Length: 480
Image 1 (cartoon, rainbow, N blue to C red):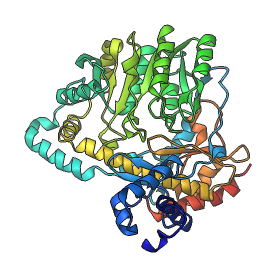
Image 2 (cartoon, rainbow, N blue to C red):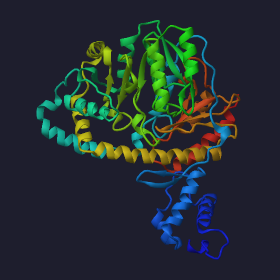
Image 3 (cartoon, helix red, strand yellow):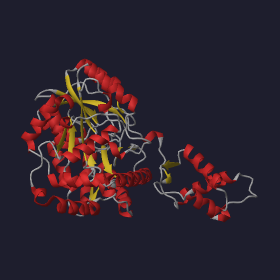
Image 4 (cartoon, one colour):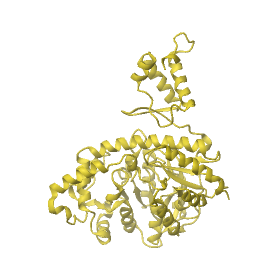
């Protein structure tokens, strides 16, 4: 490498470093998501000073080619084409009675088929597995707990775990009373309890559009109606559309993922989240915040939970460890605020309690510091995977494809355009051994038939890149 840098060259040394990095990208020697040599290592290789390399890296960062990650170094980004971003959809005029269970069942069946590339399942933990650490922790807990490990746990949750969660919310200036926090069987049960607390069959619930299909199916099963509020791919729902919807409809509650949306990956800034809470509480409308992806942000800081901005206690927080520690443990929680008594009653009726041994293990996992260490590793791997997947999609997908740029989480949203049928592509891909998630199930109505969701929450390999190539070839057959 030292031969590519010349002090006799008319260009400054930092400019030559910039050109070197660009050449490596063009040659395919440096791929999106990969880490650049450290400042010291690059300086040693090129026989130049560390400040010179740092100047080059900082300019490359300013040009959007690389990004600095705290305590990790510099990484190559994928190029983001302006025309590739998803379009804004129109505000739904009327609430929708949901009927999506048939297609959702097909998607779930595809996820669990053997020997299928699982782009269709949002399981970010797979990128940095916790199985060995949790196995060690559970063995220790079994020894400590003895026979009590197989008993029922308290209805509202294992007290030490609740205390851990309460302390974590203090980092955001949020004081949570122990009686307001109930441990649940995953976030889905937390969301069901929250909806039962604030709505009855026939009521209208505002949701993001597109929206996680589990929320849509939950609304259907509870006999509620959904009103879709368009989503900005960068900053969450459009507040002007929400204000209009509140003027025109009797909305009982909103279910939003303001920290990180699934499937688009939008990230609502704190100032906008504060405006959202104020808008809803002025009208006495409850906000149910689905915060399962909050800790998997790629931004400089985590989003502040909406709870922090509530003045009337109308914000209910739902979250879980399914996306950050262990989906099979099925441990989530709800911070119900003024609805705490109702939430505890619904929890008791639905499942009595969450698994004690799993709660105890997660408590020890957090207390040891291993949980936070793994979260940092997981965010780094997911961010790298995102860049690699976007690069692959830009290389292989039709030029008309619009691709989201998620600010965290583990999924990417692709819109192929109106001439394509992503439901047809879903079936074609499954026949080829690839599972994807068709966009149609992310709408309570009939939107997003040309869209699909892909997960990059996987250990990256050449096999995944080949699967994206195959998927792009199948799009030709998915034209209407």
